[in-house]
Length: 396
Image (cartoon, rainbow, N blue to C red; front, side):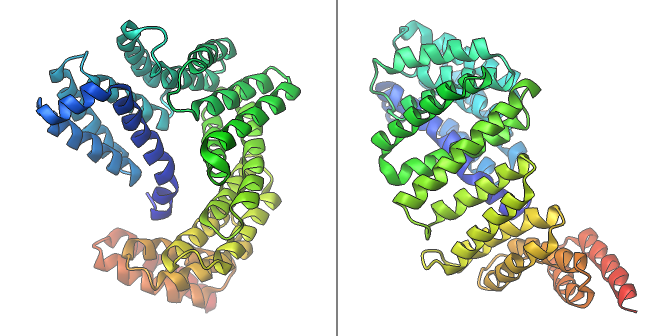
């Protein structure tokens, strides 16, 4: 997996996985603290959980899954009524959703629900489980099941103070159900309610960023959802992302990473809608803001510009991608990462080759070959040498 892809996933992955751990530790404060202080053989479980989090954040999904299975073995030894067991189920459900394995995710969530149900129907940690089940139902095109889970979450949330942002998340999910039922008025009303609630609970600066991250999650979910719901999810994601950009611009300004990343998300959503001109415009605006800002260091700027340029090269919009990749390459010289340098040189040389600028492409490919060989990646280096030969033939 490319470095930029790992970075792109990092925020969402860390948010999903770490949030689960924090939610459950809040839900079981006494048991959690007792288990940590008394030992109970939990050190290995904690180590495996955090190893899984780190591996997934860095794109090492298979390794993360292995650590999670080890954590599950540890948790089973503690017993199914130990809080660490239900926390593990939450992590396993999160991991399955990230891989769009909805049946597996539902199975883990239902197991967790069954274990927590004896604590009472008003137990507040049931809310995230109902939200998870609603997400899965939406992805599978089951609106009635989604509505049922959201109604339970809403009723429970209205009598609990646990994690106030859930109220906003419930409204946004109900908005998508309304849109799927062809009620655009209710969709707009519930969307506004969700945004207002987010502003109220997390204050204006974070509201736009939260909404932007949620929008791209919904958009990516649409690619794996039931065909009946995929268009609805994409439409909702576009509305959420557009509103997020406005919130960020108004409350955070256009110099920070929040604004720049929101434009990246919005561009990706436009691509899903097959609106390339809007996609390119988003990336160009984001690139301009990235270069102009004084709030980002060279590494951040290099990564962001690469993230804008890469999808354009993949879509063969070479002329639009070239300025972004050129500037990213300049910044990357100040970043001590050969792997990242490989990614940039690979796409920049491909972009130049696509524009028939063979001589310059060869220059970057030769540097790429040297780095690949120094990393022991000989097969990739040989492929680049073959491409150099092909480009050289063009010049002759």
